[in-house]
Image (cartoon, rainbow, N blue to C red):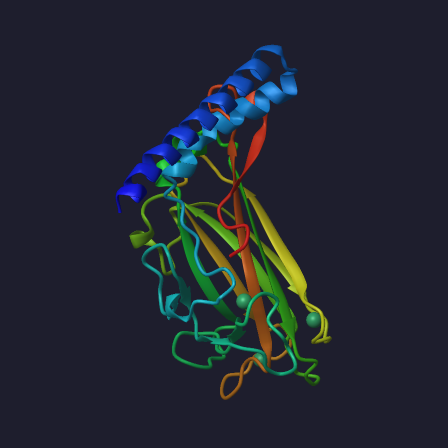
Length: 269
Ligand SMILES: [Ca+2]
Ligand SMILES: [Ca+2]
Ligand SMILES: [Ca+2]
C-alpha cells in the first residue's frame, strides 16, 4: 500500500510537469505563431469553462435508454415525452440506424388513435438558461437532425416525417398546450420517406435562436399525410433513430466577428 501512496504523487507531478511543458509550447506558438493558430488556442481557452460546467442537456438521441421515453406532456429537461410511441429493436425488416433500438411511432395522441390529430410527436426540451449572454446576441444557432424509415405499405401508407424546433421564453414548466404567446420563433421541416426498408432518410432543421429565448423544444414526428385513421392502426410501420442536436454559440460575446463555433451537445447520442 505504501508503494501505491508513493506512486500517485509521482504520477501527479508528472502530469503537472507535462501540462506545464505543453503550456510553454502553446505560449511560444501564441507569440510566434500565425493568427489562425492563435485564434484556435484562444477559442479553446474561452470555451474550456463552458465544457466543464455545461448545463445543456440532451439525452437518449439513439433511444438506447428505454427509461427516458415517456407518454404525455413534457415539463422538464432530460427525457423524451409525447404521444404514444414505442422503443423497439429491429422489426418489419428495419434495423436501427444506430445501436440496438429505435422508435416506432404508434398513435397521434397520448391516449390512442384519433381522427382529430395527424401527427405522432415526441418532444425534448433543451434549457439555455446558463447561456443567456450568448443567446442575447441573437447569433446563436441550433440544428436538429434525425433519421427515418418505414415499410412500403399499401395505398394508405403514410410517408411523411417532420422535425421541428420551437424557441420559447420562460421555463419549461410553462410549456403551453395551445397558447404559444411565449414562442419566440420556430421552424418545421418535413420529409417524404421512400418505401425501401434498407435506407434511412435524414431530416434536418436549423434555427437562429432569437434573443430572449430561454429554452428550446425539439420535436420529431411521423405524420398521417395520406390516410388519417380515426381508429385501430394509425401508423403501419414508421420508425426513427439517432437524433442529433448541435447548438452553435458565438465564439466571444464581445468579439462576435470571430465567427461561430460548433458547440456539440451530443455528437453521438
Ligand atoms: Ca438507436
Ligand atoms: Ca427508407
Ligand atoms: Ca394513417
